[in-house]
Image (cartoon, rainbow, N blue to C red; front, side):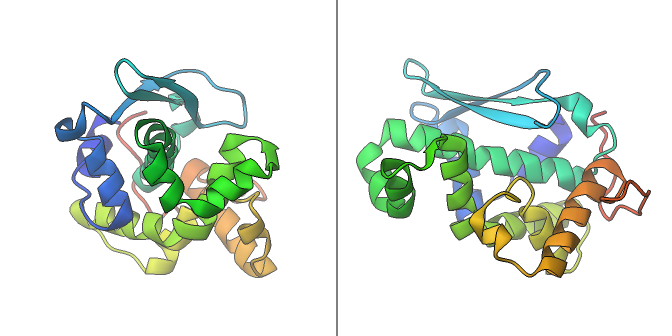
Length: 209
């Protein structure tokens, strides 16, 4: 995963690039993100804790590397980028709450009105679906270029929906689009489609198995 992280750390464009650069050493006094490997529940590939360490300004994400044994570099990069947004939101609301509340008013309304109960993860995902799908797609395209490849933007957009299939925004998509997205996310992660049939992956198998 380290080689993938090295390229992700080079992302500099758009809102995702801004998030990644916040976790650079230049901002270590306010924004720290710890990534570790660990076993998670069967349907969870990665998880960012809502626990914030105020002494080190650190948020921790656990990646279950066993879940990525057949995953492409783009599938893993998508997961890392997705979790970086979770980490940023947890950190931002603790380090600079007034600014964060002004930047994410709908997220605050969802949380205050308990639209998703007290499930902060679901509140985050609704915000992702509203404002970050295109940003994640653009970051994946930039990541791919850094590694010497390029693909149609729809491919990156489909991947960007990974982890957001339960959101209202996803459910409002056309049924054929939802199936296409879910198949692509599954294929890049496992090499199989929703029916369990082997399919060609677009990304490259990662070197972190």
